[in-house]
Amino acid sequence: MNDIVIHHESEVIGKALTALSGILTRPWSIMEICGGQTHAFMQTGLSAMLPDEIELIHGPGCPVCVTSLELVDKAVAIAAKENVIFTSYGDMLRVPGSESNLFSVRARGGDVRVVYSPMEALQIAQKNPQKEVVFFGIGFETTAPSNAISVIKAKERNIQNYSMLVSHVRVPPAMHAILSADNNRVQGFLAAGHVCAVMGMEEYFPIAEKYQIPITVTGFEPFDLLRGILETVRMLEKGTVGVVNAYERAVSSQGNKQAQEIIEQAFTECDRQWRGIGMIPNSGWKLNADYAQYDAELKFEVGDIITRESEVCISGLILQGIKKPNQCPAFGTLCTPQNPLGATMVSSEGACAAYYRYGRN
Image (tube, rainbow, N blue to C red; front, side):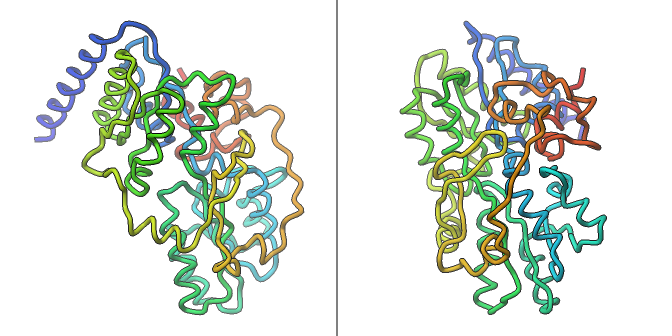
């Protein structure tokens, strides 16, 4: 049965690749905004199957990778404090700060724990009322609702020893920053289906119109990605702009209204520093005034943090789509998943990690 399914998928993909080759008249550069899409392209070998005219530019859609060095250093400072249980997703533990990381704090005796959801961190706070429990709330629009729920529940239950170090970033402002840059090479976008499943598609129409580019919402399976490329190239070849939904089974135009209301209840927009990219206006969320008591930056007074990026790492250029990971002089030598210089080599969605694992040759 599995052989039949695989054969059918291969046949469908083969037809789509033939259709793509049949409409190409010139080279095109397309950015997949999501790091999960980058890994899917590399892992399945689909990137190598694409016609030579298609160049994939890897975008900054990796939440671990774009979490600012300043916030990593703040996390390290908080986690090293006495009486603190610092909780985080596993990827963040080895992301290098200026001089240390969360894994090193744990090795020195700090109580740093890997959790799989913010609600798990909230449960730890309930079980350890004598401790301050902090959750490192990173992510794009996809994780914002669950992070928001944790502080909403903390307030409802009057849990005072829970707080969140917030590092939420938003996709549309990053797209504006990329497309308005002088060195921009992006001619079309593959938008992340899971982000659009939460937020809908409305924010993308003004971007397509302003920069006169096509944007296709797509998923992560090989045919989803290939269909996204095909729809984007069709618009490029015809000279049309707009937004196409190629992930109808998961995405609607309006998105998930309930999730959006939860985000709005706890968060407010803010300027956000992106690692390797810089400050992007209105590109993040922070806890609003109603939930400021759960803001770990305010609670632990870690505002005066001086950061220092690696002089060798070019992850900022990679996140902006200007360089490929294998163009970095440290790639695979000074910088490996075991000894990363930048977050793009650490994260399971990082472009450098994808190249190291699937495409070094």
